[in-house]
Length: 495
Image (tube, rainbow, N blue to C red; front, side, top):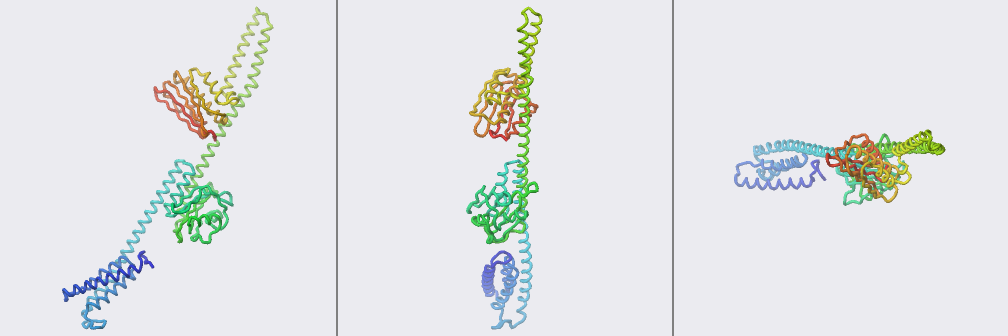
């Protein structure tokens, strides 16, 4: 049995008894040395100790027991309970009120100390929770992956709420859920992340799904279903859950489990809900980011498709008509006498038609090179580098065709870099390196020119948008006098 102070009652009784015995021996010793003095106030020391350490009930009992013992061993009572001379009761009449007053004052001081300690503990816990929330919010603001946020939330919740286990589950419809993160104490069994559980039976995760609000089970003894069995396997004896709402839809739940068979703090749901809101923000941000990337990719794909359509229309329409017209004019030219003035004029017309056809071919090639669609990135880059106005060293280490969107992006990165090198760099050599592994394609275009390229140029910004729309990144390094290097990485399985 414990007292409101948290100390065992039996310990208080033992301490009181030891103090009274010790004080009695001291009073007897002092009485033998100075028999004319009164030493009853010695018992006040024990009263103060018990008053400060235990509740007022034990302190009052200690006060009266001390008075009775003092009365018995020190005063001359001739075998009775009262002394022969009433004046000898005067010290006792002073001791009892002083002792009781000490009981009250020490009790109040003890209660104030306990209240101050409790308030300090609450402030410390609040500071810990706020620090944990800030750490998670920082991860969300940095845009880290949802899986990293989920893991951080599970760990921070377990530490902040002082529980052994915390899991985050994502609902898969109305009949099952998937475990997306878990915190397990090292001494307990682990719940496997990625595991899926039917939402059968009566358990916290199923209750949150049905209600759409927080739920708790202060005793897991009667919980049922696969999730309840998993909680039982890790030693969970009570649980609390909070919903995770994303865009007004119930996305999942945060659930904590404790191995202690006692109700969780009444404020646990509210504290858990604070972390659930951060999870919801992280999920919403990730979804918005994925939707933005997908939207940008669709815009780029639509632009590329429009380029291909224009290139085909030019090739199959106007360019073919120019070729046919050129051949017809050449045929007319061949039928005329060699010394005819008309023949020379027709020859000029034929040459102009051929030049117009070539310009149109180059124009359509700039819109979208047919060789890229037909033969792939390596031949397209070779043709591009051959047409460059300066020497280009090309190295392409790709073992097979890449997705069309990746090839188009890589081609235009190299094309823009070569154009900039020709117009602005005053370079004598450009080096182009393209390689790929199973995950990404890497491009580097470097020249030995004057450097100082403007990274905010419209062409580079357009390329950056194209690369990032595919989930990649692009970087320009161009110090004055040190040349320019353009690097890009594009996921092989682009968005």
